[in-house]
Image (cartoon, rainbow, N blue to C red; front, side):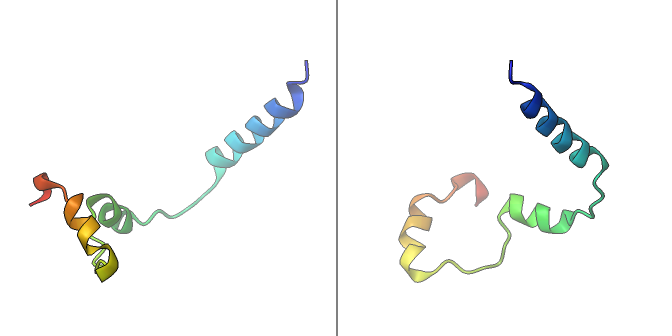
Length: 58
């Protein structure tokens, strides 16, 4: 018992996702996924960046 409110909310969210119109920025998504943001790493985090750098990316 008590599932009515939860199910109604799930239905509302699902309907919103199904019928919502949006214009995705695929170029921005690609840059984000490939790490090509172009933003320089602050000096205080440079040592961490080198420590966790992906060797396969080189």
